[in-house]
Image (tube, rainbow, N blue to C red; front, side, top):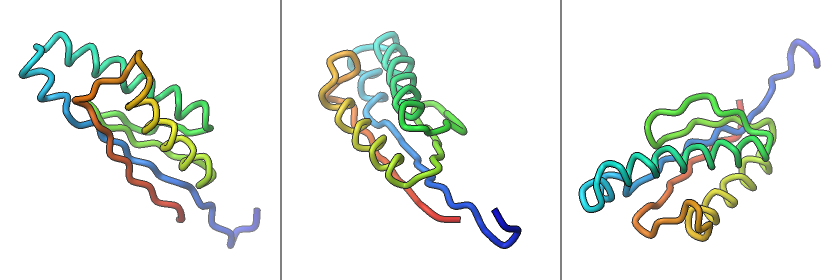
Length: 103
C-alpha cells in the first residue's frame, strides 16, 4: 500500500430498544438476561462476518469491518435473528442499525 492510499472501512452502530419496557413489565432479571444474551449473540455474528467490536455500552455496539458487503451481510443477519431466532427473539425488542463506509 502506498503512502498516499487511504484505507476504507465500514462502521456499524447497533442499538437495541425495548429493554426498558421489559424491565418495567417483566422485571429486572428478565431484562438483564436479555442484555447479556443479545449483545453476545451480536458479537458472535460480527465475528462471523469478519467484524471487530470496538465498543459496547449497555445495549449499543460499535463494530468495524474491512468490507462494506460484510457489514451489510452482518446487519441483515442481526435483524433476521433478532426477530426469528427463538434463543434471542422477543417481540418487545427491536434493533436499529446505522452504517457508514469510507475514510
